[in-house]
Amino acid sequence: MDVDEVWQRVQPVGEVSLSGRPVLVVLLAALVAVGVGPVWRVLRLGVTLVHELGHAGVGILCGRRFTGFVLRGDMSGHAVTVGPARGFGRVATTWAGYPAPAVVGAAAVWLAGRGWGPSVLAAVLVVLLVALVRSRSVLTAIVVLAVGAVTGWLWWSGSDRLHAQVLVGTGVVLVVGAWRHLGAVAGSRDRSASDAAVLAQLTGVPRVLWVVSFALVCAGATWLTASTVLAAL
Image (cartoon, rainbow, N blue to C red; front, side, top):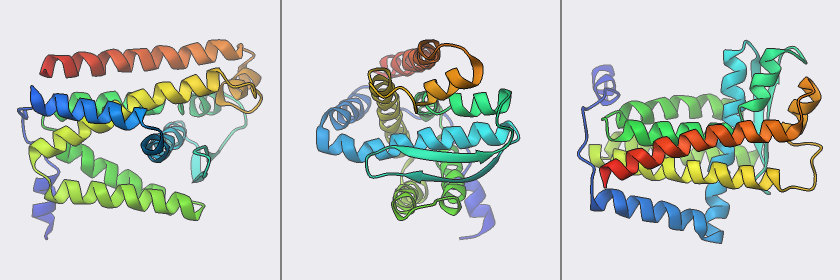
């Protein structure tokens, strides 16, 4: 493996023919995976991983320093960014978590059929490498390593069509998972420690409006995902 070969493998490959039965099979598999309890309990860790990295990524873009994150056995998590305790950067960083899986999922689905699979997978590997360095628990490191190993194998060994199929399936899981996470926080009786509650404390804007803002972004991501998948059927 040399630099030229790696560079070739991160380039877009042009439009991938992904329609009909391949899309339907992936879509059904993703929906079943999200709906089956034991499978969802495993996949939910991946959704939480994207949630926490959403906090981290927006925090970095806002000039904050990402120092670490953890995933817990109850499928919750926590990311730490260092910066001003109030202000736009803190608000944007706190807000980013719940919409992140939906936005990432919709982007993955949209890019899949346009030949960007290798580029997306390579970018995911880079993000996971940074995340591994910032992992602050054994479980967190195991999850990041497991996702990274699967992503690395797929990027290096998978066909262009397989790249697209996996991205579509993963994107659907992330979008549906974002709604499930949002439903859990919206219906929770403990409203003191959620991202929406923290945002209410930081801004004075009621918690329910922050939940609505999460829902609006998830709705937009769902529309993009659904329209892309339906166009391929």
